[in-house]
Length: 224
Image (cartoon, rainbow, N blue to C red):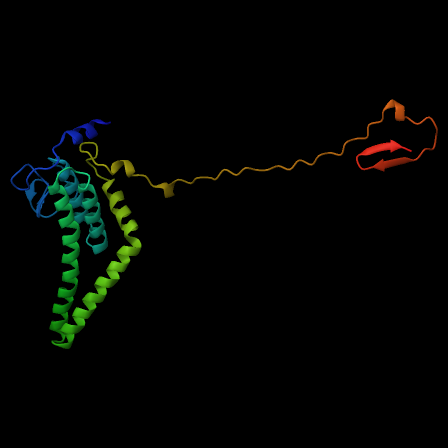
């Protein structure tokens, strides 16, 4: 194990947000300050939960689209499952399912409000329907392409500039197999044409009488 891995293992599982030493865990708490999410904060996380929260904050600072934010929530919930204790698991579930419900609600609410301004009554209904359809489309997109969005976020985590200072489990995954051309090994089967065996004449078959005919029977030659 590396030094950073040893330091990570020595960290507490979690501390109490805001009251404890957490620098990234909690709404509007990032890089040790009460602020919006910071991309790759330079403050060392205070716990294993804080380590996951730091990367989650980084994703929220970088991405603005729903699919990548949802992927960050999914990764966060996955990482909290590895941490001992109930609180990290509750935190992961709240982030994953709470943010999903929040985005789904605001998809309908924002479009409903916008429709009511454009055309009260019919516009309100149309905005509500459009928000619902948008939720269905985004859910389908997530079902079909979630692996891609998750991989995008993981690759982004692997670009952490402070990876040499703080433990980051995704730095080792900074590997792009598509950039390496692997040439398949082809076993070439060479067919060697066996040369026909040359006729072997033993001394006892050497003709003593001239003008005998030479006959061929398959692979053997003989005089008859």
